[in-house]
Image (tube, rainbow, N blue to C red; front, side, top):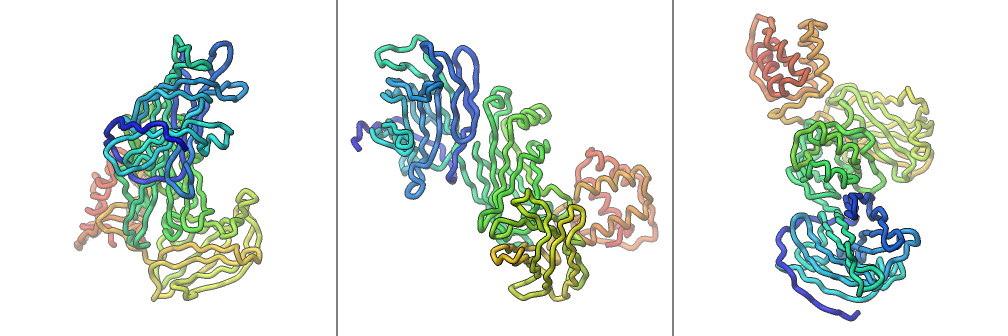
Length: 531
């Protein structure tokens, strides 16, 4: 291909972290007499406007330059006749581009076929360089067009981020005739970024979670092993104009399939302390090594957060299991069956009885429980601890139950194995769970449902003995986790009134967990709660 020119235009500063193979168009706006907004996922066609007796529009789309050989990301821009979908001729584009708040370039481009392709290339340099070629790009070839291909080279440009384009159309159909009123488009394409977060879980050891964001870079990632909760932050402008231009905020999590605590059947997402609707999340278990969880936060959800939260210019995400007890989900290798499994008691102990409760559902029948033969086993380090074969129930109200006496010498990770479903040796999956869970005694973990108990006790709907016995049981079984507390002998079993008041205030959300736990610690210290 013949190179037309090479131009160095500006020093680049900001760098982003990692790259993922997918791109999504986040927001765009069109200013021609009135405000109008484009909206879409992956590509975008703006609302049409009148020009010289016909309807015209601007299209943007993104793709990998060559997924097999390069990380380069291409973004195409074309001016088209809205009705015929044919690109217009002799189009002059005036384009200013930024990545985030970092300026990339501002330049005029002429396109005989109304079609431009920008190829973002990572190079180890301190400046942004534009190199132009005439030839067939991947997108141009697909459309049967010879396009102008402009390489945008600079530090880490293919790693993703929010790319902004301010586009003015100066000529259409004839280079010699400039428009009296340029057509002005403002668009933003977000190329996905992946950040890897490594940590050590007290029960599952070395783990990592990848967060893939299709909007902006994330920060402040944390994982709470007691609450099984993920949290992180991302910049976001909380204004009506920005929300109106933002179709969706798309986030993904990649969770290893050997990390049993997070292989739950559903998740709840909070943004700035606002709980989002349950239908924003989708679980994809059809990858071999990782589970992928998609969260699509639509404009309606963004508007609700804006109206109920006071946070400025940030989205604080919290993602946790949608149930107060462990309820895991796994898909068989052939993709046909989904296994839903829970157990009793919630915290399994060595040398004790347990119940494994599971359902077998058929994915092709919309996850309806089905009656099919199966082989079930419990193993640790490939040693079989228990095994049975049976036929699952197709009842929606009854479940398959296996009673299992946990040997006294078994602790740590064990696997629940489901094999040969419906006689198919590819219909198999394993679910890792933990015997004798390790919890951090320096942290506080209290399930939300205990608030009801605290409220009933504060209102004297249950008596002191029942409340204390319930708290003792929950602490001993690690359902409530509080810091280690020394205990003294005391003959008095009277509970001070301030603790009852605290319980009511905590149930109503007026005081935090730490303040409520201080009351429990006092009762332990005085020997009223025995643990």
